[in-house]
Length: 130
Image (tube, rainbow, N blue to C red):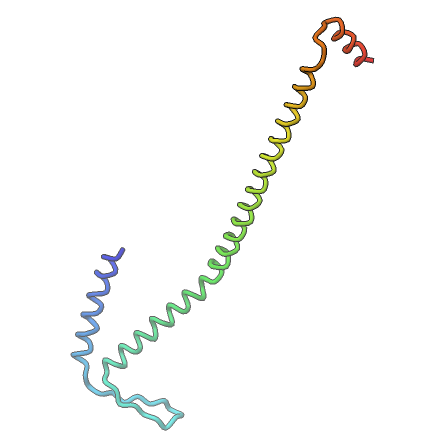
């Protein structure tokens, strides 16, 4: 991209220099209702007009992209908010997994303390079915 900009900038600069050297005659500028007049070289008037057009075009383009820039800012804020929500959900899931593992460990410890007599187990099942 940098090479392309140089490939465009160098010929444009050469054309501007050539224009300035070949148009050194004076021109009188005046604005009708005002009594002021300016005697300027033609190249200065031409290059100033090009510069004003370039700046005005850049300003119009910048103002025209206002909607895109504001949408990009809005979407960036939304993405940051959603990333925060995702991180909170991951922490909540990790906490729930930890509590579930703790509860499962407590249940397995409690069932390890129960008698292993098959008859007692059958009695427990009959009592639970009632």
